[in-house]
Image 1 (cartoon, protein in one colour):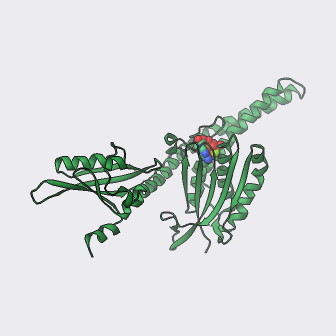
Image 2: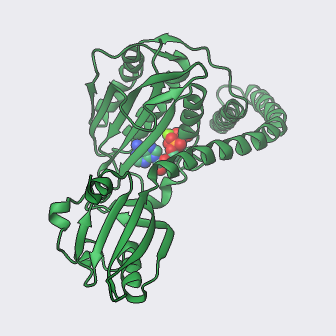
Image 3: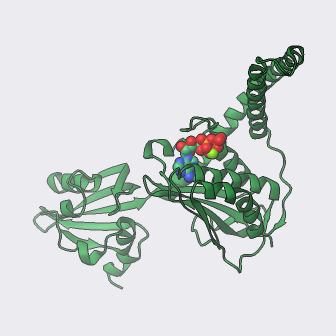
Length: 357
Ligand SMILES: Nc1ncnc2c1ncn2[C@@H]1O[C@H](COP(=O)(O)OP(=O)(O)OP(=O)(O)O)[C@@H](O)[C@H]1O
Ligand SMILES: [Mg+2]
């Protein structure tokens, strides 16, 4: 076996350049990570393959210039579609017989899966902290709110049905009820009701959501498209809680398409390397994916890290609790939720749920 075969089989991307920064080696992990083929990269100057200020170009240039190794634990690599992949980079010089630097090699490790898992953990922690605060707050607010509601009802009765001031009492009641609903949701988040998992037909569940939203969606010129995998096995879940999840996701998708578009509901058995199999305590279990996809506004990069935070919203009448609740329900199911979004093109939300064995 020659060294090329060994390097080709490495899970980390290996990229080598000569002293003119021309690519002389590019293994298959590098092809996958950068989404650029070795055939196209070979012989080209690295600055033409990546932007001149890319971390990889900078580190390899420094190594060629100084003969020293460089490392960057938090770099990024830009894909042709401009998506950034988080990576760690380590470079090393290669010397000729005379001791001059004749080439440099970089080992680039894809950190996106690790970052995703870290984000999952952080999300869980933020939710727990917000939840604890909410319980305290909710108790303080509920009693005075009950008193206000009672007083407004009395006032309404005193005024009599014909009074023009009834307009104000009804606004008061609606808004008090809205605050009450927020508190109920917060308490749910803080002290989640235990789920009662049973085998569930995911397609019937999705249809429960689709049927009640379809008429409203049509008015907004949103059409619902189904792409269900007919061989999908039943999942293990709490039907009512999951209906809540898909209601939230479908509502977000419709709200993201104010000028209409297509909302796609799809299902499949998951082949995802990270979430395709989960440990439910009694060994590994296969997962299915249920996806809600829209052609809406997309999520701006700056907002992406915060969309699961309770109360993060970009909507005038939004509470910012939808996705926080989705995350929690999926966590209770030992599942996961993943969001991919391209600004101006749309959003794709994937829920991973365990199959019922
Ligand atoms: N499909 C989507 N397309 C674009 N942006 C989205 C989408 N889903 C979520 N978002 C963004 O994430 C934010 C948080 O969503 P979340 O569902 O948690 O709250 P919300 O929709 O604002 O309020 P609500 O509590 O009523 O659901 C939204 O305000 C929006 O900016
Ligand atoms: Mg929402």
